[in-house]
Every structure is written in structure tokens, then in C-alpha cells.
Length: 274
Image (cartoon, rainbow, N blue to C red; front, side, top):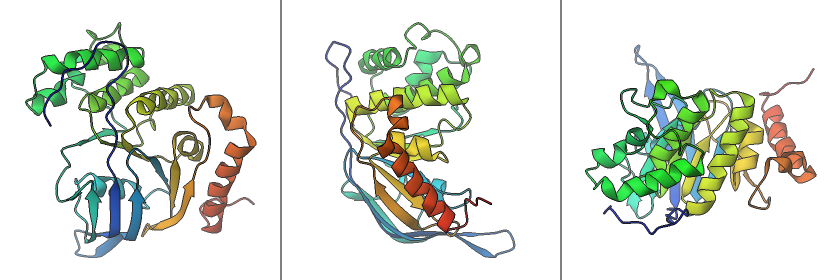
């Protein structure tokens, strides 16, 4: 991808997403003893360009495995995954990832951490400084660009990680429990910040989370997975108006979606009320 100079102003450049087609994709791991452990049963799923999809399910159901397969960081044991026009055989050049750990380099300040992938890809850094600064402003980091990771709170560090992913202008953003280590209030604010950024760029997002409420609040669709070996148990379209505010979490429509997902878990014995 060639570096592009951005227009002035606070708005971020439109990125737009890329479609995903998962066809019979499964994953089997081999243990040290040689035993085969099936993490994912064959999965079929389509994601439209610019959709925000969340994946929820019990621990060990293969949520992260599916995410890594879509990103080309793990190979399918069977089946195929296509991102855009290309079959996934290696990390996709127009994708970026955010994980639960921010993985910031402690010897680089905020701005330099955000620009790291630009340097790695040998793009012209000067063309991306303006975009990095606008991303920082969007998430309230404009006064911290010269600070180092040890000088930041956990939420601020995670905002840096999101900016580092978005500065690359990825058409596909993969997020594996990025807010899992944050306190409840910071987690809610991060959800709001993420939606504001996504609504401007409309890239395709695959978001793995254990939080049903978070998944419903963020997503166009929520994919509910069964216990291992994971497969799609429910593919639920979330028809809530955008832009969304935290107050929507108390609406009957929101609570209905949350209840539907929880009932899917109860039917599988994942949630049990005595």
C-alpha cells in the first residue's frame, strides 16, 4: 500500500473495509503426546465490507483461534478463508491487530509507538505523522505524544495500541479481548472511543470478547460459539441505531439481544441458574 498524504482537518481519512468468506474452516492441534485436539469444527461465515462483528463464547471454544486464522497468523487444518479477493495463506497486508496486552515498546514515546508499523513497512513516516496526531486527538492523547508507556494508565496504553493499528489504514482490524484487562469504567469508555473511530473509517472489524453486553453495544452482528470444538451456534444481527451511546444499554431492545445470547449459553449448559 502506498503512503498517501492526508487532507487537513480533524476528520480521519475514509478507509472502508474488506469482505471475509470463511468456508469449512477448522483447526486441529497436536499435543506433545501426539494426541489430536480439535479446537474448531468446520465453520462457514460471511462478513460484509465494513461490518463490525463480535465473537463470544466460553473459554477454550476457539474464538481467538478463528481470529488468528482470519488474520493469517494460523493456518486452517481444513477449509479456507478469503479476505477480499485473496485466499488467506499468510498475514494479510491490509490488516492490523490489537490484543489484550498493548505490547508497546517502553523505550519509544506515544507518537513513536503509533508510527512503529509505518517504519516496519518502510512507508514514508512523514506522511503519517498528521494521521497519528489526529488519531491521538480523537482518543484524548494529544497532550501525551511525548510520554512513555510507563507514564500512562492501562486505558491510555490501550488507546495507543488502537491508534497504532489504525495509523496503518487497515481495511481489516482484528481485536482479541483488547479491553479484557481494564476496569469496568475504563472499559466502557474504550468501547465508546472505539465506536467513534470505527464510524469514521468503516473498516471491517472482528472483535473477540467474553462480555455479552460489550458485544451487543459494539456490533452489527454477534456470533455465538459453542464449547470446544467451537462452531457457530447463533449468528445474531444487532439492529440498534448508530451512533450508539452508553444509555442504549438500558433500552428494551438492547436487553432483548443480551437475553437472546444468554439463553443460547444456557441451552448449552454454559450459564446455569440454580
